View 1: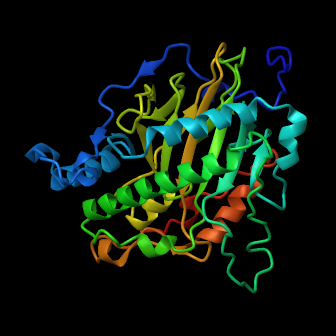
View 2: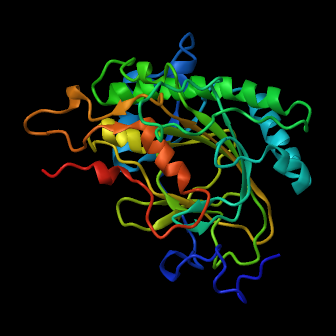
Length: 357
């Protein structure tokens, strides 16, 4: 095992200003949103649980926090527990078995144990698969645009791994689309406004394993970042460790796990579409010195050919567009390149597309 205290040049060590504090702030007041109104329409629902109230709640959470938690989401618990069990079994395999499905600089999907965030190596191992297969790759005159392959690499073990992943993906994708309808309504848009962006989506699910780390004061399971996609639906175990940078004061606060809930993060593309009405939130993952931690984020992402820009309905002379168009395929390709090695240059961010006002 790497000894971070005797190897100051270790790629895992965070710079002084980004190391975790010894004291942890447990978040108070994080929006917890009950999705009963959209999932159990035939039952008697009180006024406080009306869809109109739900839309307002989600809009407020997106604007003030950039994330929230949901309950009564209708994702079957047995399907979640099945993929969680398969995740544990997969990461419990020998490294030799896991690297049989290791991703590389050509195929972006599969197992990987050396990912970097903000040019610092994360204390974790992952497995990625795309929800929609095959991934639609649009024709392009630019040979550098989509030079990657997007083919799922399924391991032989556990035997039910693929089935468990695909069944769970179907359910959590439905939840993501329901949430996008509510977010659209909260912005004053028609519920289906975003749907066409996902006809050939590049959404993926990631299985995360954060092994115990004896140096939680030096390393992070996942360094500070914002999610590049549209929306993240995160299932985390009861160990916890997710921290979010609170917008009101810039403090890192820990999100306490709630049984059978999901954490929802606003991504960069919603920030651009909404013209900064809703902002993506910076977050990171602490390591635990004694316990393994597992989590499963679903990342809702548009088609590679999508040009993401502020929506016409949300801009006018008083609120002009704040971003130039961002081609999602080129943006994602540029971002993925930074995951394989340490670099002296920050990776591409949406602020690089910001227009001067």
